[in-house]
Length: 233
Image (cartoon, rainbow, N blue to C red; front, side, top):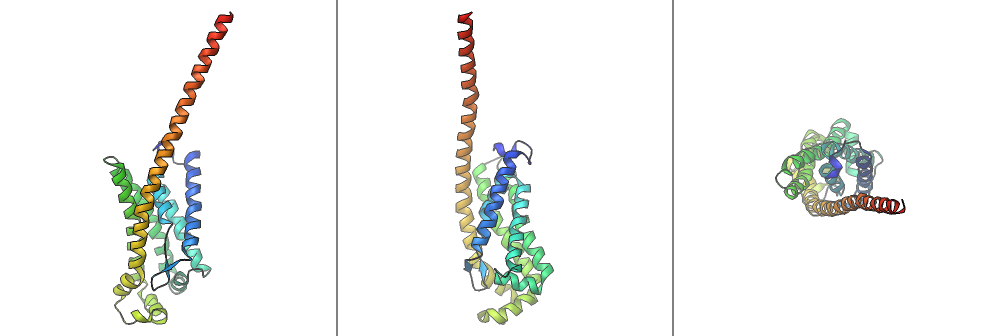
């Protein structure tokens, strides 16, 4: 892709990154209104623009978008918009903050690296791998962070998830908090990210062809002008 050939902080890359950042903010705020699962968790539609950023702009963009994703999640906890995040943030502020920021940043960064490595053999395989890796890492780090906050989760479960009260903490995390979210997010990412990548690739090729044709037209016009000038002379 032409996006990556210049410096990362080129005007084109910054403009595209700004669009993706806006999508991350909007989709996370919108997604936070759609609860999924027994624990009051919400869908992360932001994984799609996060994945696209990692693929099209590289691991640094994935890292930045992952940080924005995590920051917005934390703000929904601070404001109380996301009840689960608000609860664990109040009970375990350090582990919650680290987990929420790290899971998005690591997902975007690793996806960008894997795409760059695998695309040398097959670009579309690389896209699907990146699309799958993002929700896997995002969920995996959430599980590790949740284990570090087992006390807070047990209290939350006792108060708001009576069906899981007294269960093993790993069972609560996997079955009560993760399973539904993970498979829906994985499906959304595997469908949307490759589809949008394909659309972007087609549009980019059309734009490049247009810009390549313009200099040729200008050269032809200048040649015609020279011929007319010579005839007049």
